[in-house]
Length: 206
Image (cartoon, rainbow, N blue to C red; front, side):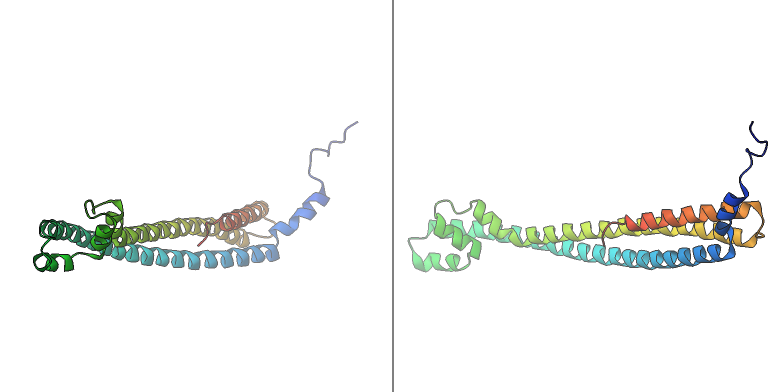
């Protein structure tokens, strides 16, 4: 025959859970959440600052790359002009000499490879190598800025979760030690701490 008290929680089980709502437990939770909030806030501000620096540097390098690209275009146009004039007068060293001296290093190397067809792929690779390197550098910097932005957003999520946990712990601390909601608020605070710690542990690398 089943006892009529079987549906009620055992007093021993309640005693085992009572520590969740104790002032010591809530104090520890408040301390841990405050520390995690401070750490995430500091690192979030650092990530945002790193993002701004990376973006500023990326824009500077991109501007430099655009200028270098225009300079490379002008160099290629000048090489075409100098080469055509030199090629027409190459049998007259005195007349062709100044045009030969005006060749860019890339054109000089191209003429040594093939005087009849100097404007090959290797020529353009050499002429545009510097701007292309700068474009690659700018792309890397923009990628780094995006990584810092993602990290900053994730840290803000950690701060938000911890803020909820702090609010729950504070609300629980304001209630009497025998209030039925205090145990529930303490349990929710623990869940918030676990959620914040998991979110922090899964952050992308800096």
